[in-house]
Image 1 (cartoon, rainbow, N blue to C red):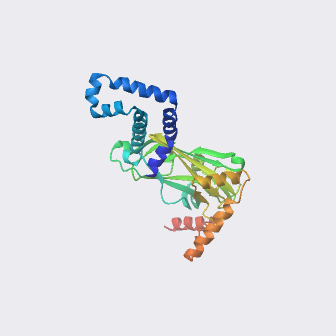
Image 2 (cartoon, rainbow, N blue to C red):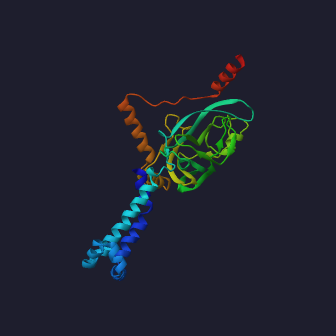
Image 3 (tube, rainbow, N blue to C red):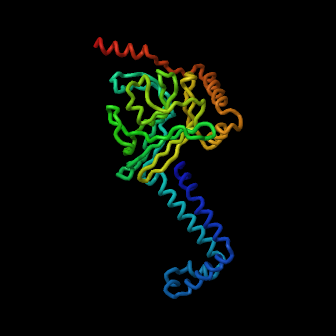
Length: 309
């Protein structure tokens, strides 16, 4: 239903154009006159039967019925274009999250750390090849104060060994893709944007990336491929400075407008709102979300266990 509404919104201007044109007196008269002349043709009159006689007796109903048929056709197309079409249907799986990563740099030393990511899944119910999201490109943009771009990168599709492969790939139905957004730099104790160059870092204690020094960012994730074009919005907070927050949140339309205004220095603080929401959640559930703090000691212990084994 949600995808049907999105498709209907995308074709809103077409619906509006049909209604506006139908209410122009000149167009209204031309359509009515042309239809009446068309129905006077003997072959057409025999084919249309009672419907043709009805239009001949009630010419004022020609335009309203024609507009209704056109709008109904647009709705049928939107329905076809939606979830029922069997096309790729990309959705955020669960909620955006910040969790531990386990990667090795060129020094071949595995490193534990923290990174914020979004999991994208293909929820299509199609059973044909049309349900596969092909030639899919995932682009991540980070916008800071005044909505200035701080980072823009394409997410690499990777092999199981973690090495970059290409910036386009395919997503089968029920398959998921982790889209990394930001990573913790343990050496500099900073939050960094996650880019393809991050995989090329010499050590994951000091991964490559753009330093993110502002407390709040607007994240735009664009999904584009064959039969796919979607834009997802998130808010990113500095989870290195404040390790007790989740750090990344999915945004609806109104929340996105709020964050955009905040980044322009307008309106009440969105961050205080979310802090209040988290406090209410903790009070309601009698617990608090806690994230493990992974330090160099954890990596040293990992190396020691590997050596002992």
